Image (tube, rainbow, N blue to C red; front, side, top):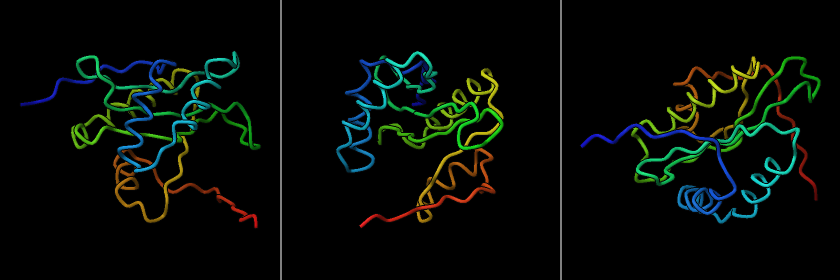
Length: 150
C-alpha cells in the first residue's frame, strides 16, 4: 500500500521529542540537548529565519530537515544556506520523505533569496552522499578546515 504524501511544515518547539527520537533511532546516539539548543535558538532570536521543517504522515512526525540562512557570514558575499541535519524515521525511509523535505527546504530557500546551499557529509557516508548527489549537490570549491584540539 502506497504511503500518502507527507505534509511539510515549519518546525516548532513542540516537535523536539519527535525530532530527538528519530535522530536517536537513525544515529544511534542521544543528542536531545543539541536539538533543544538548535530549536530554541531559532525561536528566541528574531533575526534567525526558521528554515527547519518536519514531515508528517497522519499527524505523526516521520522526518525533519534543519538548516540556517547566512547573509554574508564567512566572507561569502551571496545569501547562502546550510543543511546541518536531516533525518527520517526508519519505518519511512526509502519512501521519498527525505526528497520531499529537501524539495520543500530548497523551495523555501529560493523564496528568501538564497543562491547556494551547503552541507557537510562524512567522506565515508556513501548513502548520504548518494542522496545529496541525486538532488544535484556536488563537491564544493571551498575547503573545510579542521583543527584537533588536545
